[in-house]
Image (cartoon, rainbow, N blue to C red):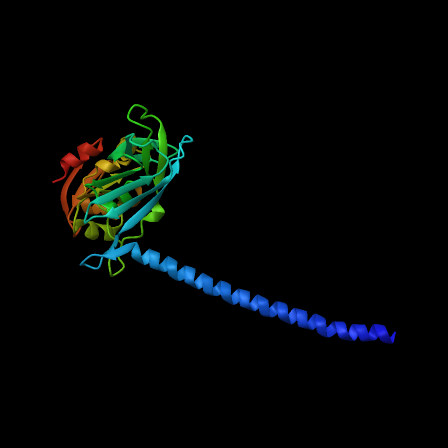
Length: 290
């Protein structure tokens, strides 16, 4: 019995010592992890800061957006595409590996996604030996208004129906563009839901047209669909604001709107410049703007 008690007396301090040692090691591990996490977070903040810049008016502008280019149709051609702001234009650099040396591969920015690519909206220079650089006469802000978009690379000119690489230009890549005072800026060439503050913001650089439409109106739905299908064709100096006809009594009274499918062009103070109805397409709408 004495021997057993002695062993128990010896075991208890040993157990306490082991527990203490584990606690110390755990504390060191936790502290190290927190430090690494802090470094990682600091790095992420730096990346986010580097991805933005301010113009002379203090407006936050997008600098670079990186699109991951994945291999398609077992091509093995993957890489990245970098979109950079070039003072109102966009530089697109496509870099992919695994292609056949010297074989030109057409590339474009398509409407839609890599799973369901639609019509070509912007042609890009041909990829040769895995690289192509293009300057688009369109701003990153404009591209943001046309999402979803996808960058697609074709196998060759003769096999243009086969995609070998593609990447979605994600909405997440575009930081919110704001003014110093926190107001949201209107985007160039946009079609957005009406908000009173957008009229003044948009009118600083855009013509503004209010589109009074109702969801139950067939002709309204037709022109709404046409605008959405042709977002890339909205002039960069035009903002179309979608007004809910059924819930906008004050606006209808202000502009004398008595039926749906009515368009009202306004100035920065919301004063009516012109009113018309019946435009069935985006192009018809644009032709009416003064």
